[in-house]
Length: 506
Image (tube, rainbow, N blue to C red; front, side, top):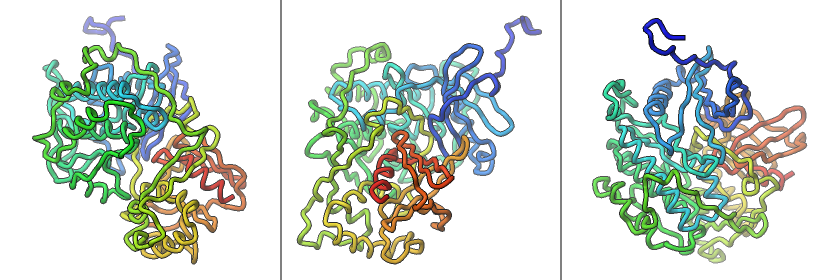
């Protein structure tokens, strides 16, 4: 039926009742992403459900507006596609294409990245970012978690809430005027490990800022970690500003082409954004010599990647004494101990059944980043340290750690002679939405929730009542205690470490 003006009728506005909603794919502080099937067409989507009350209360409505504007502008194989938007009394709904194979972070953590894979995925990221720059958009929060993978393992860049829109789309003169993304143009946005130095120096983001993030991601492919990662956000920033990074002597994931990849990283990780390599120059570097048709990457076949060798389900991690000392604060002077070597001996961590390495059902759609608990105790700061304490000179390190704890912000909520085994920011899910809380596991043993901002203890999980601890995927785990079920999410994707640590103390 034609409209009154003689043209085609406007598309029908979708409503929540038009969809059958499935499992939760990802969660954030004000949004959840769920799988959904449109009843009329039987098409599958990923639907981002945003809490309107939270947006108003936290003055974050602009982020939803920016994301909608960017996705409406975009039309590219490497950018997640937005199909519909609608709202209910309580929520905004973004109906997007479903990326079925998780995100790049999970892929890098579980697969061997050959030279072919590193070239392929870095090239696709370059093409996707080059496209959004061409339509006047800066991403400003590019990281592996925001790069999804389609069913055929091509990338889909997502999460444009922090984007900056510079100009209307050049190809469409009728485009609406650009949305002002942030009143403070030079304010920090994004994620610490991938933040460019110009943003830390209160300068405006440019296309070079996104290029910086590409260099950090390529480094991760080689080294299995980002180039700049301190024990907390502040020290991460200091490492970025000092350009303090180094390639490990042995490259875990790349089997060849190391020197060419290093050359790319070194041309990207330049403090002065004006001297940083540009995307056209990047494409000409020897590392990408196998790419003959940049425009045809979406039609090419993604490389098949083998699982990381882990001696069964064992993952080996090494922590230097410098890192261990830094994680536990300046008062932990372990370097003065003549009995300690320069590098803490490798420890083996046994992954439990159903861990992300073995799981085929590990699709994630992240929209929130873990926040540091504070400058000394964050979700980054104790990563793996609990395993070191359990395996390397436990009595000596325990006493030193107990001393270090006395000056931490967690000291008031710790009991006498009680050592923190793990601490971090987790999400506690209720319905479709999630609340960020601090969670602390001690060797008493005790599982204590606390306020992440004020460090005030809240409820505890009754330790004597725990009947099961179950790993769901790389982020989610469930604790059953008495009649209560705690659905928890580790925002750093190390749910298996929580499960392993708790089970060791049960």
